[in-house]
Amino acid sequence: MLAAIAAMLFPVTVAAQDTDSGASPLNLQVKSAVYGSSQGALPFWLHSNRNGKVDSSGVNWINEIGFRTGLFDYGRLSVDAGANLVGRLSGNSSAHFNELYLHADFGGYRLSAGRFINPIGLNNHELSVGSMMVSRNATPVPRISLHTPEFLDVPFLNGHLQYKGMFSHGRLEDSRFVSNALLHQKYFYLRVNAGKWSGTGGIIHNVVWGGEHPRFGQLPQSFSDFLRVVTGKAADSNSNAPGIDIGNVIGNAIAAYEFGLRYEHEQFTASLTRLFYLEDKVSARFRSPWDGVWGLNFSAKERNRFVTDFIYEHINTKQQDAKPFQGRGRANYYDNAAYRSGWTYHNQVLGLPLILFNTEGLYDEQTKSIRNNIIIGHHFGMKGTFTKQLRYRLFATYSRNYGFNPFRDKEIRLDLDARRTDQYSLYLGLQYELPNVKGLELSASVAADTGQLYEDNIGLGVGFVWKPVYR
Image (cartoon, rainbow, N blue to C red):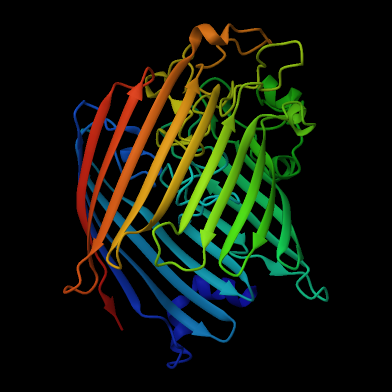
């Protein structure tokens, strides 16, 4: 990996050593799209899982220019770079890079630095309602990451046992309740292959830690504190960490056990996944075994057909570490008493977008930042082709929403049925590749919300994507 690190730090010098490096061409992409709705806010599926680009509050005109290119490619070592600049005109106009990165690949491992899209989990992220760990809902957090993009073979076992892992360090924004908090992330999966069948199991661990707290000041973030974060231990009792970090674990932990069973047929791949959500030490002992996500995925090998992929997901977050005789626990998923901005980045949930964030409570000690984290959900997504040039994606999402637990310090029995609201969100997106204009695609989408959580609403989007290729 020393060669990969050198390539990250000195990409121009390294590339100059081999003029026939075989670097890949420049891939340029230009996008423009307009989104609007019959109400003030956009429907759920016009702003969710769009990598932080779309403002949910109203009409958006979004223009993007992005590129990906190889800087160096020699043997097992390659270095490439990418960026995507977003210019948004809306009620909250913005110009920002939602991608800006360098990747160095060597022997199946990748060292990455910057902002890059990398959702976590075994599900189909393109069709999913969103991973409970890291989805495509928010702008990517800037970080440094060492990971394996694909499963790698364990030596000497002829591919029967494979692994996939990631270890990452990042920093969150300063405009949050605990400013400049740090982000630790890691996961590790093992996969057993037996003919057409394979089974996968792994653990995912995310922690928001450190930063400047408005009451406690600078929270612990020394190297010894970092080791406590990595190993999931409590904060030092002699430090100025909040009591919850000393009594439980340091920082705000968002974690999961995840398992999958996959069948590889000559004509399709099918898989069943199960994510067990973990919020604290009690969760790690399967205190809430029904909380998490079930997923059923299908993908056809033949890509020019009416249905190429579909997914069904069932989401449950009701128990939240409650004991069997209690109606609702105190875990308060995605929320934390010290890190009140919760599992968010730039006012958008990093994980499941069905869990909502109350931006008005960001700096109010008495107001929750995360709301609506007690839910039951069902999601169906599919995509395919009508013709060679015309493709589609279709989503249908139902959620039963119970709000959140307003009491931080005790387990209680809430009258959930009295707080229940049902919500339906639909989406159809079309992409048409112009046959006589190479690299140019037109897009159109329609989305609708109906129920008690959001206003009844219908929205439309139109745009284009242009992908010229230069060498």
